[in-house]
Length: 273
Length: 153
Image 1 (cartoon, helix red, strand yellow):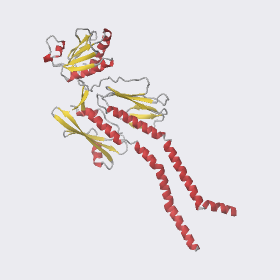
Image 2 (tube, rainbow over the protein chains, first blue to last red):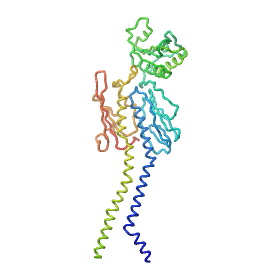
Image 3 (cartoon, rainbow over the protein chains, first blue to last red):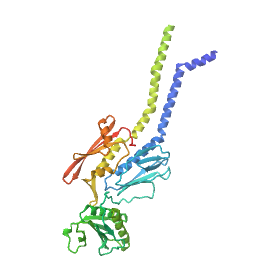
Image 4 (tube, each protein chain N blue to C red):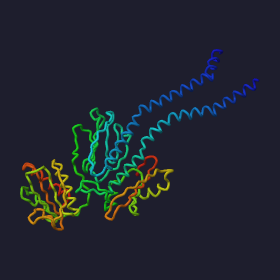
């Protein structure tokens, strides 16, 4: 009886109660610190927000800027970036929104946690913004940006059988005119001469983008046709319809099929009725 | 003396129950929740988001010339189209003022939120000069964001 009473006395001792209470408090604090330190939920939230804002900031770059940047990513996580949302995998608990931009073509990648996917490449090249995790991938940072425009459909015909050579050849006829010439000498460049119409500028931009893709630098040059000599082939730029004269310097004959294909693709991208 | 001793213990119990125990509970609660709250707040980058969107809007409004291959800070002729390029799921409102003309793609939310800033919403305003055929004009971007992220459903 006495022994029981002494145990109860001990349990009810303020010092004992205080020690037990402090123990509980300490356990809760340690548990809380452990939760914070090992919080993968926080890490996932952080990476989803960081990547979403990085995509948003690529859209905010000046239109003439091309860049790529490497981003170290933890091997414990995977990622998807679809429907304006970046989600960190595994378990799709944590995500963050970004805002897609119809001026750009967004190319993203989805991957599960992998030891080989510890580095992402964010890039902006012309009208493409992307995220890639392939080690061998390299965006074309020479790509040209072109404004999005709702074009007036032109009743023009592309001559798919045309070939280009040292004498100017009409590749497009109708409501738009496009003539091309191959100049074997000089530095490799495609000079795209245009008449001063916004439609000519837009076609030239799309054309230039395709020609850059095959590794040839371009220059778009507006021409004052009143200053041309009578025998200058660029006189075809006179008139009220969109007109372009593409003069390609320093390219071997072997490239001319590719060049012609790029020209036709550029014109087709603009859209013909 | 015995009565006095009992009275002291009664007060001590009362003090423990009414003061020390709630105080301990409050301290534990604060220790557990404050760091987590700080961490969650750090993933509410509203200011950064607003700065990015503001720059993005200015870039959309500035025309790009394929001839020079550069953005020449000239105001685009079709402002409404330029603003339609990036419509967000995130809940925020914005108004663009160009030479007295106002454009607010999500006007309903903006009109509700703007007067309640800065109490319930954050508000960010920025100006930029853009060129036009007649000279230079000031473009103002005014944004309001909830203090914590929400999305339009």
